Image (cartoon, rainbow, N blue to C red; front, side, top):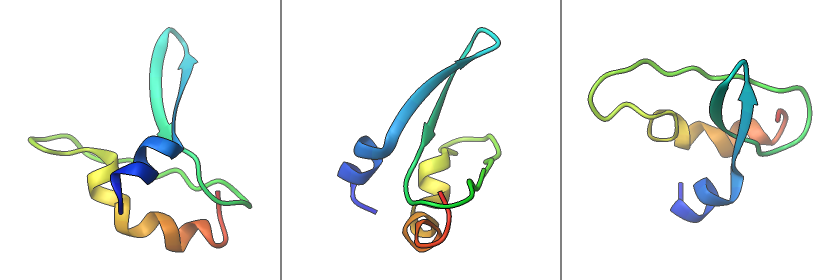
Length: 59
């Protein structure tokens, strides 16, 4: 997944005093994907190959 798509879809929201980063792409019902921790773990690196196929039907 190109870095430009990561930057273009990245957004932030404040919730209960926390700043949460998320990506929004596609249309339809939302899908929430959570990633685990650990060295080098990031949501985008874990899910970048799944984002475009899921965006065809989901948001």
